[in-house]
Length: 174
Image (tube, rainbow, N blue to C red; front, side, top):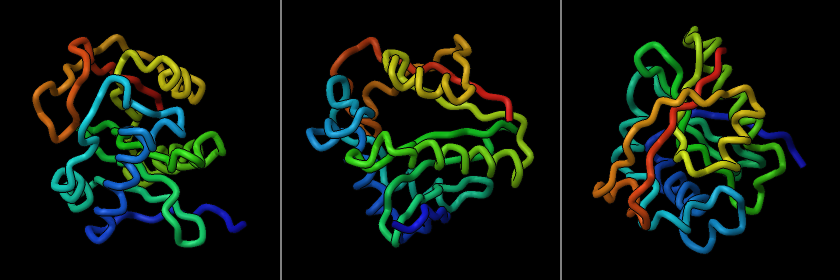
């Protein structure tokens, strides 16, 4: 097996990224991994137009992790008001737990720290995702106690099955 390689996404990757992100978080296919949100969210996980804009804007990169030319994982890293932002983290469900996600997270942190000279990385996680938050805490992220509303009613990002969803900001010094 060859090693994992990383590259920046281009607009021609949008369809493959949307399919990967959807498979990791929505519907029955997502239940093969541990990142599923299928019990509390339905519908879209990523909007193709938003994704294309993230790919094309300055100091924003959708990082693809590939092995033998096959997409294994993706994540979005960006400069957001002088801080690194990490999101859209997705690993093929059947490959989760094998170290791909840890390697991709480290690559995104490297981009924010070394290429953009940002002091820290922030992300938002749905605060009921205890297992996911614990994953990030084991990698040095801390809960900030800062919450942001879930975009209820904006179907570009999903249809909530419960009304108590909100995001918590996690942060790590780089």
